[in-house]
Length: 337
Image (cartoon, rainbow, N blue to C red; front, side, top):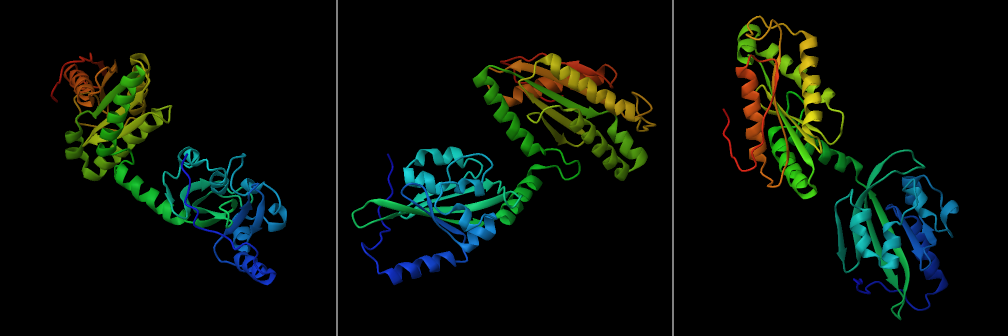
């Protein structure tokens, strides 16, 4: 079992005045801080901690109910894990933070906390350090907190911008490639079907030539929205593959389910009736869709894309505004038509 070095110790019998001063100093620190004793009872809950959590010291000192300040359901705080030396649980309980570290002086972690009393969700940077007496006995743990919600949200926003297509708001090509690689590996591991749709706006160059690029951009956004609204699960991923081409990844979805989604998308665009005077398929904007579904024994995203592409170009050759199902060849590596 991992144990932290016994760095922080208290003097054996501090003078009463010094002890009282130390407590008063901690209570008035600008950093939100609380201290639990060896039985996980709150000894100190300072003013800054009251402001951060909305929980008064008088309501929590002497109890082990400090978790109420941060979570809606009972679970240990970082200080509790340090006190019990349950370091192996940190990565699970702080998975949302995705960042924790052990040092000579304690444990550092980050996590989203629901903060029930203040009625908002905050992202906190948390440090918990053990205190030992001169005999080496663990007698208390100090936990300090910093609200870094704004920094975290800014990071999330930047990551979202990097992952999204600027025009349509769907996942971009880079995100699509990453998602498909991840899902093919998962499908191979769990032996579950994985479906892929490749979607193309029929005669889009003629649309741009006729109506101009601003209208072309509007058309792309309209199609993207229809695709996104046609997906019924959070696990499904819609992306702008490039130009006027889109893609949909549907984990754990057989071909029958994928074709239902494909038809829903095709009909949604058809019903919008966006005029297209120079389309060879119709007098309004339409889609051609290629679909494939496979149990992927060999996780190769390129083969899935090649198969779905083959279906897409078959749909175009057969008159557009239709769906064509492709056969997935496990050992074949196709090229884009």
